[in-house]
Every structure is written in C-alpha cells, then in structure tokens.
Image 1 (cartoon, rainbow, N blue to C red):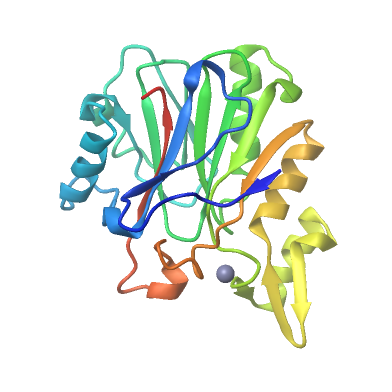
Image 2 (image 1 turned 180 degrees about the horizontal axis):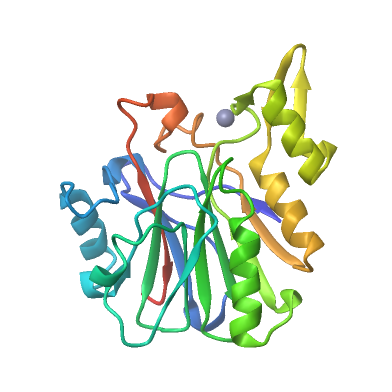
Length: 246
Ligand SMILES: [Zn+2]
C-alpha cells in the first residue's frame, strides 16, 4: 500500500500513517519548515528542541544515535536515558519501553519503521545505499526479542530519495540488482536509477514480512523535504523521523 504525506503549508512536521499500529503508536517526519535536526549533541539544538516541544514529549524520552550508515541496531532498555545512546555509533533503535520515543535523522536515506502488530514493541532504522540491510537486522531483533514471526511485524517505509532522482553509476546499479533483483534498477538511456524502497521490500518480504506501507514522497523532488542530493554536501540539512507513543 502506498501513500503520500499529508500536511499544510507552514507545518513543521507531518504524520506518517502507520499500517495496523497497536495502542496508538505514532510516527512523524519533520519538514523543511521544522529546520535542521542535526544529530550531534554538540551541534546547535534549537530546531530539535522545538520539534520535541511541539510533539509534547520530554527530551528525556527522545532517543537518537550517532549515525554512521552502519547495519547496527541497538536496544533501548526499560531504565535507560538518552544521554547513554547519543554517542553510540549505530543506525537503528529498537525498544519495548513505551516511554521511549525513537528518532533517526535523514536527508535522502530512508527511515524504516518496524513494529509488532499487537505488542508495544517498535524500531526505526536509517537506511541508505550503504546501510541497506539494516531493516533486516531490525526485523531479526524484533522477532528474536518478542519470540515473533515476521508475519506479525508491520513495516512502513518513510520518505527518502526516489528512483526518479537517485542516479547511480553502473557498478552500484549492478551490485544492487544482483542482491535485490532486476526491479530495483531503472535504466534510462545510459543512466541508472536505484529504487531503495523496492530493495527493502524485496529483502523484508523474502524474510516473511507481509504488511507494508510505503510513503512515496521523494526527498529530492518534494520541496518541503530536506535532501542531501538536492541541497548539496555543504548545505544539506537533516529531518527527524520519529516513532513512539506520544
Ligand atoms: Zn525525485
């Protein structure tokens, strides 16, 4: 099932509608109007604090990592605090703690949300070209920790760069095609376009996930979203993708 983001001009964040989410589990993504959600603690924080305040949550519930395009997913325990995680180098968070609100930052890479359909257990990962596969690590962790089958897990893929704009070289295209199938590369004349969403759908459905939602917005060609490719390596800003009970 596919959908696009629904928001009004001037909004700082948009809801990400989740499929079969239990107990009012909720996800959002900050928009360009929300500013820069830079992930390092030492960086300026006002935009992030404004987002946290506007979501009505305490910063003591807001967990994020030092992202490295890795495939590492960390578990947030029941009695933990965000300071213990903000410098950990990893790209996915998982928790069964209903007080924890989990965030990754993105600007073309996909935020992928995974959660159990009937238990308060959820995860979010930051998955770009380099990190593709991390959603499978998160799925394994959910299944292991909850003693669940992949069919009990629901997956929502949030906004990221689309195959409309993700132009890659032939080596990268070939590598992805080998791993995830011919549908993940679109060839136009001599150019190759990668579809990160399809790569993740292929990966997760092979593992047994049956319930998916895909948010179609492309970060590079949706003006209200930040994009590394569109804004450039010097000027790009980050959005936050957030999941939890809030
Ligand atoms: Zn696009």
